[in-house]
Length: 66
Image (cartoon, rainbow, N blue to C red; front, side, top):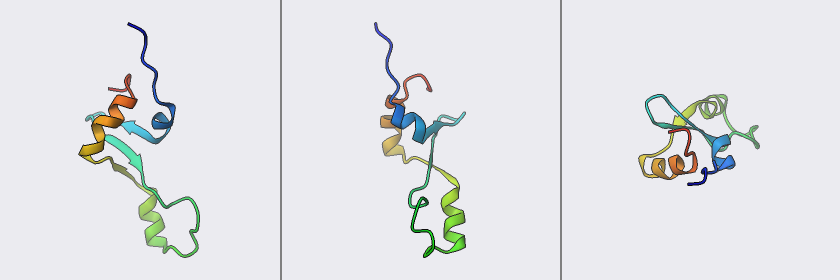
């Protein structure tokens, strides 16, 4: 059985927590920041978790992180 390749794009975007959840960064924080409030930008900076629906797909892309 050959080794599985990790999807490098997914590896850069997602991290698996010790509890098995998939952590991700929030979108809309990279440009056009002048019209966004300080509060909104601060909240976009924090990590969040992937939805349960997408979790299985992301874990499949990261075979050695499980």
